Length: 66
Image (cartoon, rainbow, N blue to C red):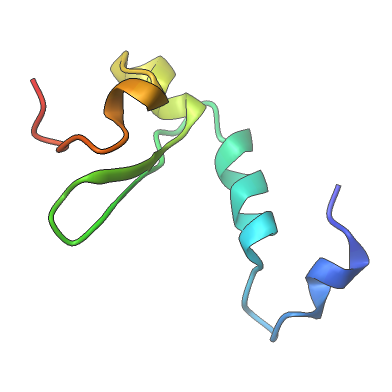
């Protein structure tokens, strides 16, 4: 549940907690974040289900992993 304090961000912006809630709830969609070098910095449960790699297996690795 989103706390009232989290809604205090500027209109049109979401907090980090809200973003994490969205990412964690997206089990039918792969949501992957990388740094500028293409190294995985976050990997949601949807990515695990769809692509087969767990988050611990992918964090710090390149998306080009085969």
